[in-house]
Image 1 (spheres, rainbow, N blue to C red):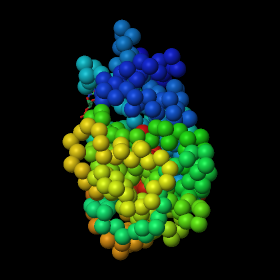
Image 2 (tube, protein in one colour):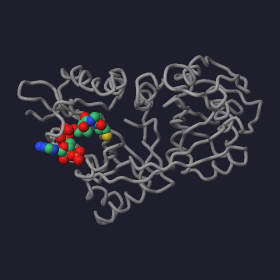
Image 3 (cartoon, rainbow, N blue to C red):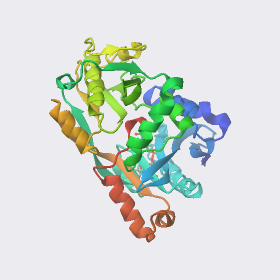
Image 4 (cartoon, helix red, strand yellow):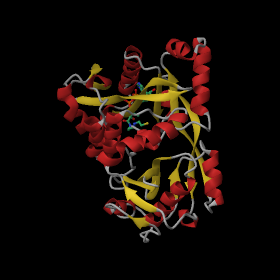
Length: 356
Ligand SMILES: CC(C)(COP(=O)(O)OP(=O)(O)OC[C@H]1O[C@@H](n2cnc3c(N)ncnc32)[C@H](O)[C@@H]1OP(=O)(O)O)[C@@H](O)C(=O)NCCC(=O)NCCS
């Protein structure tokens, strides 16, 4: 058995292997081809004695906000072993190599999203509860009917969107930090892995303006048949603009005409309500709200019914306690405890748009 980092020439083979998992080669290729921080040496592979590729684990290079510091985070994903080689310790060997690689490459913390918690517990990742929010009927949201809703025009809007993201998400612990090339990459690969091919969609990026300046934006996809706002941002106090976007997305999801004046090309909106999959049209919207209690209050006052769901397939591991200790001016153990407090805090957030 050969366990090592991949080479550039092996990219296609890794994608062929991963397509045995979800039959969705394109989903995995989106990351390999569009993530500016994708590196072949962070893609780990196992080959059997005959040379066949049988397992892979990938490290996704991200940086996150932690207590005002920008901390290198290695996300673990695309963990897959070919069926006929399972339960022989192959993925375990790759996970051990992943830990060595994370340490060697200067990552300080690591995140993964898992169903098999005990498998990852063996390697030191610990699950944490986090809250998703559901706006059960976005059509009930009262919003200013004079709001105009536009779509993203990358060259025209990116600088402004980045500044809203920096100001809004940048205040929140655990959010990923994105420079311009990461933003451009994110707009090409962000999403989430649907259970079955066809249940997901490309994103629909909407925004509103006030006095010419962008006031709020939302990035929506369709996942498991419902609308998921995988990231949003708004200027201070612009709750009404965000409420309008959410209501608009609720209307789009059930195929209803928007209550707002639309500008720009909204053809992508159709992706939020058509396609295959067991879809009963619903104006419900899944997103994250718990980190922003003011927003929750404003949305409730505007008529929204909000429900929280907790999941625990969100797992973290400290990779470099000493480095974290230096950053936080704490003993390594106290810095690790502090980091876990931040990972677990209701006020923290990792946007779905930054998933891997
Ligand atoms: C999850 C997955 C990657 C594990 O791959 P694997 O190569 O079988 O992993 P390992 O053999 O190292 O470990 C699997 C189990 O076999 C056990 N095992 C390891 N070596 C073993 C051996 N020699 N004999 C018997 N069992 C063994 C491990 O302890 C582990 O037990 P656990 O499931 O209770 O934790 C594989 O099942 C897979 O590809 N699943 C589909 C994709 C997926 O779910 N990915 C993870 C998303 S979170």
